[in-house]
Amino acid sequence: MITFTKHINIQKVLLVSVLSTRATARTLFHDVIRNYKNRNKFKLDFKHIEFASRSFIDELNSLIVNHPHISFKKVNMNKQVKQMDELVHNKNDYAWEYNNKHESDLVVI
Image (cartoon, rainbow, N blue to C red; front, side, top):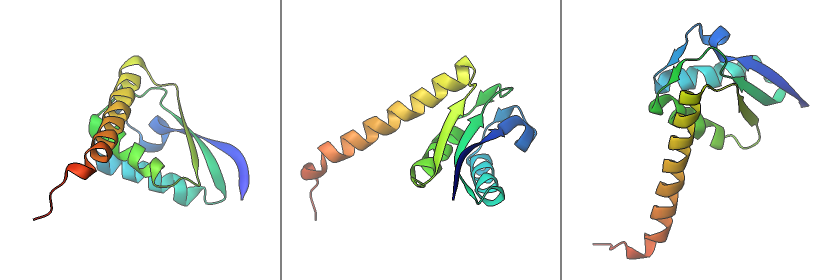
């Protein structure tokens, strides 16, 4: 497998400046994987992306986490997109932490 990074301009791939659905995240992710099978490192360029919804970011992050053999780096996020990414990331960390801390508190009926 080739190990150099493929630059993906999200706006040019999807032809939109607003990323709002989980389906859009899945489309982007699977198109990238399918079109660049011989690559395992990607830069996802958010240049010219004005907004990304919580759903889009959450789905994209989930897909990335579920494919640990592929490396993704997010670049050129504007302030709002970066804040959403951080919000979703922090929410997921909290949910994972909460679920693991309270597993022993579960009661099986």
